[in-house]
Length: 202
View 1: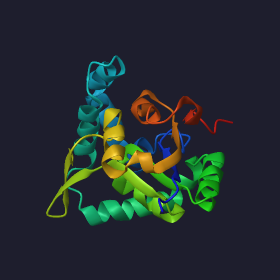
View 2 (view 1 turned 180 degrees about the horizontal axis):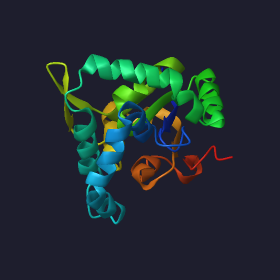
View 3 (view 1 turned 30 degrees about the vertical axis):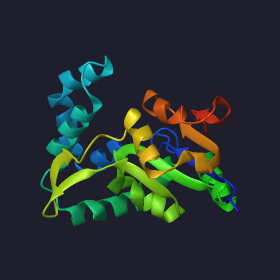
């Protein structure tokens, strides 16, 4: 007998589950002075990015390389664990957490798909008991190279990774939660009635 379809919920992280950008906050908390120096150094690229003339991945890698290149993977994971404990709880939208817990209670498969480095968001997802797909960082011999491994998990890359991981025909309903243009490809994986754009706003 064919197994019944299982419910699926796909969530963006920053701006959807959180009230602010966790990646930027992590960089600020990790290297505060250097973060603001990076903002000055890469100001032309930032301005070009906002008018869609500079790739998001290139800008992200510029910040990553300037701030974190050469850091051991173990240290990055340790800092991510501290970040989970000290900073993440304050930026999680309460209704988002309530919704995720309810979905899990209803045996829904819940996956976070985020452009934020997976290493940073994974501790929170593990604590919640949910899965994660995120931007992967490149390490060589346990040291962060300063670059992204593969593509930034944003836009069409979100949809590609979901389709690579899942046979969506085996899931129903499929609810998708996002808050920006970087989530549109993911939102379009389901019907309009199951697309939740900018949810959990007070």
